[in-house]
Image (cartoon, rainbow, N blue to C red; front, side, top):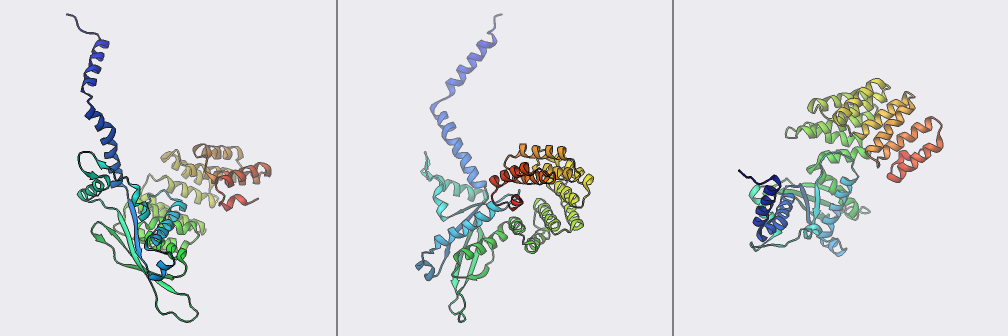
Length: 368
């Protein structure tokens, strides 16, 4: 009995498929599916919206309206999160001026705008963005020759829940300081780990430790954040040359998350600082087993090798780090230091210059 060949059957299949691709189905694919993806993204991302703050009349007269103050606070929050080096998830900040960024197009056949659909979807699934709102009150009476003070009170709301009022007193005449302090207080409530990392980056170790202590003692905090807090705590202790205490914190982190490469590479760096280079390399190897793309593990390994005068092997590790991340300034800094130890000052200068190009604010690159 005759049967059509494979090519004939495939051609027939394509013909059937094309016959079923109507205009309505094309509209579904081209318009509806991207719209559904957009709605899903808007609903599920962790948004932090800075709403207008109520301000006194003297602020408005100076051009510091409710919207302007909200935007200043939002800018300060963004700056903190941008400059803070951390792997932990950060919030997607937005404020009143960002409110128009979502296109409010009408969805065909529904007479509903896209914003409305997003809000309805959030309500149905109970997924709400965090809103920060508050008010600023300038103190009516102040001592002679003293600067005017203002009390900033803010609240964080999510859906129907609202946090208790949180207040701070700042100089009323310094709007930049007011926005910065308020941003830090807000961040301490919505993402304390990032605030702790920010404090540590600025050398404010006592304040950073106070925050991570609250994180690890919080029974409602998740294991990932507690583990990260112990790692940050260990990093602060190592910078204070409290190496044994630092290792104890890193061990705590590993107990919570045994596959955390950062905990192992930090442990390796602490051992390297103690001149226990073989042990350090073992930890750095473990970090790379867990995460073969751990750039800092390669940098730490290169440093440990350089301390053992294994120059060529050290350079190979720095090269690997840069191969993985060509914009990693620290790899160039450490490589430059290794070349300086070898008295190869011209070559070292080239590495330091490259580090400065990548990160002009990295003081370590200005050593020669």
